[in-house]
Amino acid sequence: MSQKKHDQSGFSTLEILLAMFIFIMAITAVIGVSFGNQSMIIDGQANTEAINIAQGLMEKAQADARKDFNLVNPVSAATVDRFTYGV
Image (cartoon, rainbow, N blue to C red; front, side):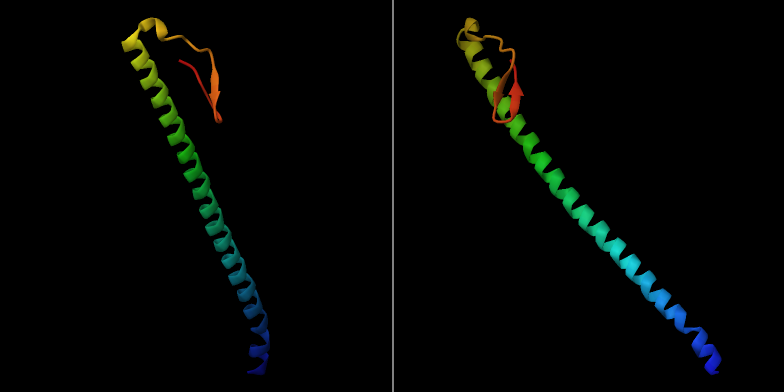
C-alpha cells in the first residue's frame, strides 16, 4: 500500500500546476475583454462627437443656403478639435 501512495504524489503537483495555468489563462482573458470594451466605448464616443459636429456644420450650411446661396463657400479642409471636415 505504501508503494502506491508514493507513486501518486507527483500527480497532485501536476494537477496544481495545471489548475494554476488554467486560472491564469482565464484571468488574462477577462482582463483583455475588459480593456477591449473600454477602447470600443471611447471609439463610440469619438464617432458620436464627429457626427454631432458634422450635423451642426450641415445645418449651418443649409441655413446659409436658405438665406443667400452665395454665402455657401466650399471649404477644402478645416480642422475642429481633432476632426477634419469640408463642405
